[in-house]
Image (cartoon, rainbow, N blue to C red; front, top):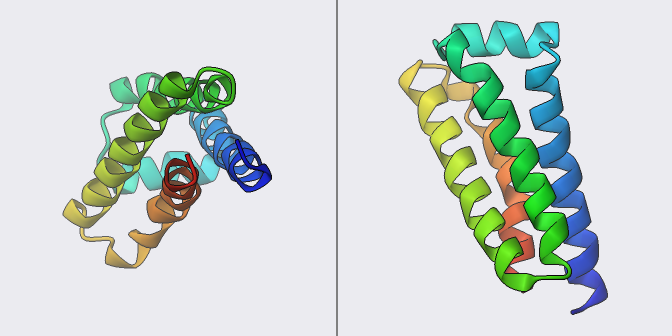
Length: 112
């Protein structure tokens, strides 16, 4: 395991964990965004928990690589789905936001 892989994985986990925490704590700006994107309120806890679980999986992957691989794939699928959700809501200028969170996860997977 390289230093680059460790650093990028820690960054990806921190970003995914932050993103999940923001959803679970219902920060005003994320509530507005999720409402604008027409994400059902009943999904919010599950979505936040999925991001936090993905972050934990990335951290566990530093010790058990297959867990990190599974978590990374899950987060890439999650953030791709988020970009699709934003596009379906016709907020095209917001599409880069989920991709910014996906980028370090993709980089961590590439460095594996």
